[in-house]
View 1 (cartoon, helix red, strand yellow):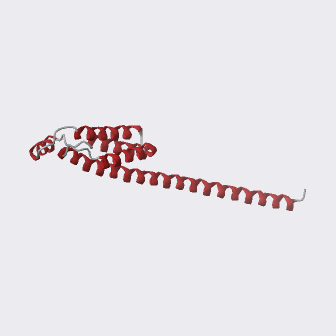
View 2: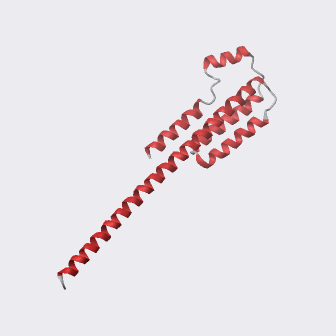
Length: 147
């Protein structure tokens, strides 16, 4: 075989290997970027969902403390948010959210609270029904950072 052919074949092989390596590197980089972007998008979506749940739950709980007439609109909104969480959230977050909704529902059947009773609940911390939910959400976000 002529040495010119060997040189040409070696050059073509090197170019092919270089091109394949470049393609593999680009593909891997793009895949990692897309995965990180998807993770960030999922985290943002869950943060908005949890914020909406916290806002609605706080308002509905406040209403439940002051009124004994069941506010179905607020509870329906909370159930809708819990259903959305079932799609994107961990089991512990969902269980905690369901507990909050149950507690709010039970509060409507209790006697209305006076301003002094509410002030007392605030002082002893029993009015913060969302603390456990917030902590579970934070744990979920911390775990997703570790993965």
